Image (cartoon, rainbow, N blue to C red; front, side):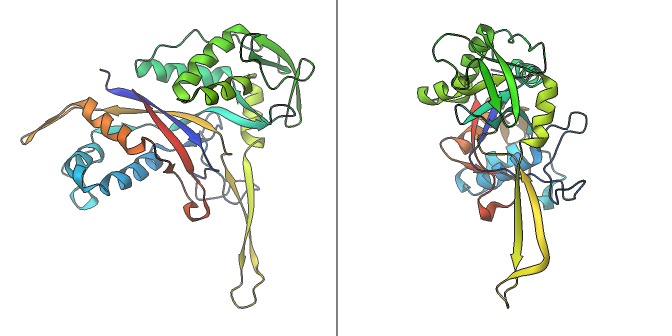
Length: 296
């Protein structure tokens, strides 16, 4: 069994993993990769919430210590045996004139996902063909299910107008991807119907313009009105965003026994099985709820 597993994340509410400072018009932007500008969830955010959930379970205290490492006061004793990568963008939900929304992805996002899947020992079909033009969008081919995004052989998302091309290779890859993402057959169909592959340059634009931006204010407790100067904006990954990460385990061998890498990874998988996870900031106003699946 491989010491690496793929982690898939579906946003159930807007996710705000911030940078702590503003660099533009948005007061509280989300974290983005430096070279690509694509949004991501830091591995530290995933590890932190999983550690908190694990430590709440006294029955697995010793295993939790091996997975996540000792507490701060004893941090010098040893590191945690499981490493958490950042969660990279896989599919971005974008408003569509048909099908309500499209799960947009791009060749770069799929190549990166396929690379991570191989690291975890998963077999995937060949990557789909690449859109040749900026104004071209690929949807799954004429098989079953049919794309829900088409309107007279065009795809309209946000303010963008694409010439649609039906792709059998995208249909094949999309079905394999849906099997990993969703356990329910209806959810798999829903995903394939809304899958859309666009040019990398188009995705770069959408990753900036299709984020959810929330305006918030603070109420003066004495007057019951908006406090002067207390209006700000927050950026968040929208509901239904799909991301992927890796977790890597190192077998543990100490004087009091040993723990195989598989047991460490199984412990992480049990922490998210059948339960939503809260990731990032603004938890008390419902941000950051997500479904997490560890692919074995």
